[in-house]
Image (cartoon, rainbow, N blue to C red):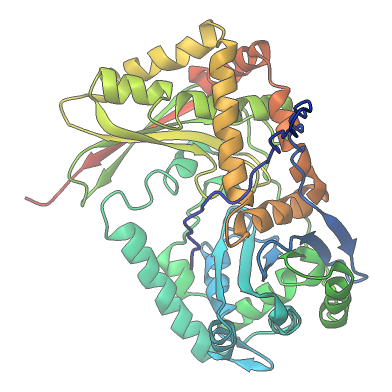
Length: 461
């Protein structure tokens, strides 16, 4: 399952207009309030992290339960297992047989879904606020146990295998470039295996494997519970302790070593696609470590180079040279630049006419990339990128579902033990200077740090 939303802008900073009385002086307009998300952070005795963000603007609550197990940190010889288990979590729990969970959510006007990402698997619900207590009860119920019978496993193996076929194997550009590029750009198995899963590995999963996976990773000390919306914080944390507190912690395995060796020479790779009508190309650079000053600079370079029709790559490849109708990509193509923990790629991709060779395209790309490496970006362009990046951020945390907010709070709790970090994002972006931007481009956007993937169409004649 995957969650997709239309995200309207509901979050803004309001300035009150001045007013005056007859014969009086006009009052000075109030300064805009500083951006701030309310965050309360608790930890239960069993290790569960609980993040609360109170907001009474809409009478709904969004609950997210995030487990620190995702595509790249799944066990060896079980490719696709993290994704398979995402499906297993909807097969019924001790007190909610299969179908009852969805019936409860939808019967009360709510929505729910789940997804598997690089470093976590998440489950969330949006419900009327008066349903918070039973919602926490049902989420705790499936943390305690799910239906791991042979029948349920066989059913979901078929569902996942068909999903792989539909989304990747039997469609043009399936998995390009989000699934393909990490396999060519990275060396560490955890960062470079087939995240969606080989069909053979999925088919070979046994009930005892599924039970061991659940007992290992689906534990309170490997999870975070986020509650955002219209609720009373004291009451909510009391319910969290009541329903999640009795669940026993697990003995967690050592964290996977995600260390990626430094790339010292450009990589070139080719892949055939039997369904693609036209060739495609992607190129990716290894990112600076998450949370560093250079990491924020790369986030702004992403907006300067790639995001939007006014980006430098779009102007060059679309408007000037007519190579493609669209160039797309970004930092972390399975989420955003904040919700991962480990090595990451900045990736750009395009589908193009066969009249343009890979060398011609990369010459055009190099012209753009060299422009930010060899010459300072002026402050006006940096400021524009900052505004665009902030706008995206505001849209996410202010969505009607509050899912973007829950997602960031969960990531900062899981990976940084600091959900309040959400309130420092703006400051970290503002700290990026033209000098830092250029230094980051020179170091991280060098050809030796790049992988180029060429997709060749091989349609049956």
